[in-house]
Image 1 (cartoon, rainbow, N blue to C red):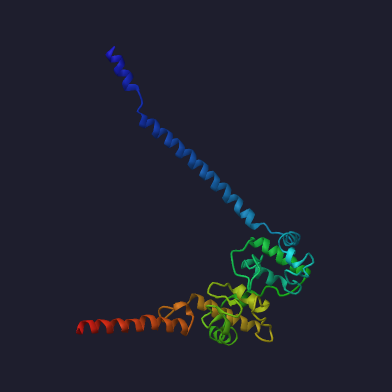
Image 2: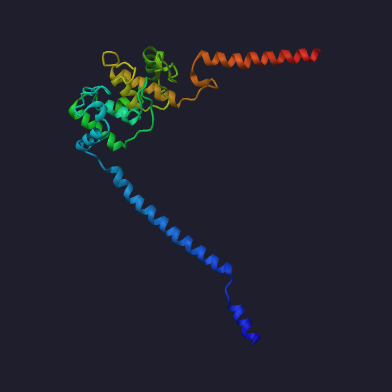
Length: 267
């Protein structure tokens, strides 16, 4: 009888073994599920990304998201300007930078995350170009960043620095408007801004700046985006105001602190 009980007790499984078995099963099934999900996503993503939308798709997107302000015929309404002559380059710029659709009326449309995918933006831009042609995309050479950096920096200083700051850090304008910083702006959007004149920016046509001049300006800005400041802290690259404030607070403050310390020592 005692031997039988001993055999039974020896044959029982530990509760820890059961928990370990359940945990191992969960890990295995979870790993299989995660692997299968990742494999399906890997096969689906390229197909979705490679899908090209048509001009008709762009028209439907425009009617659903833009026609309220710009009109079904693109001729504008009381809430938005006409799009005749703006071209696909302006549409791509406004949508890809998130400035459009406009969230609310204000002095200026702020840059934000785009609400549409790249194929959707291209489709809407193609639709606008088909109905109301205007500025289109430049050649790859214009955007290659291989132009004359020194000449481009000089052109930027003469034509752009009064608003965007000589370091392209942006600056304030009148009535709550502002010139945005260009430290993260792509070559295409720099070109688009010069050609289409968004917000308060003037249009720089070929009579003002040739394609080679625009290429040089783009090259100078791209070089500046990657350049390391050799002068130490940039202090926001806002010019003598921030530099003077820094000197006033820390320089004169240090002198006052030293004077107080010397006086306390002498007393």
